[in-house]
Image 1 (cartoon, rainbow, N blue to C red):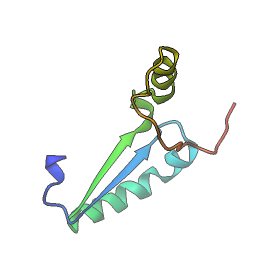
Image 2 (tube, helix red, strand yellow; image 1 turned 180 degrees about the horizontal axis):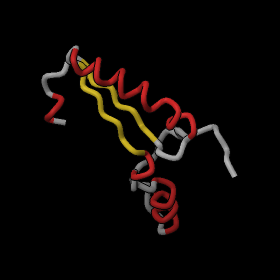
Image 3 (cartoon, one colour; image 1 turned 90 degrees about the horizontal axis):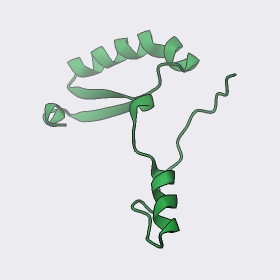
Amino acid sequence: MASFAGAKALVIVFWCNHCPYVRAYEKRFVEWADGARKRGVGVAAINSELVKHRYLPDAVDALLVGKAPPVAQSWAIGCSIKWG
């Protein structure tokens, strides 16, 4: 995050390499991000396939031993595209 300290704004995008919409939009996003960076906007793309935290299993494990979940609430964000 230190590399974005001087940015006027920071845009964080969660990306998924196998999503057909992401793949179709990638070139346009890179062009937009290049322009945004030239105007002082920080842009970070996070590959959502690499996110390792497992909120649900951690919560269930805690509850099964009578403890509070380490993270009591998280937001479900996901892709609405279903593929075979």
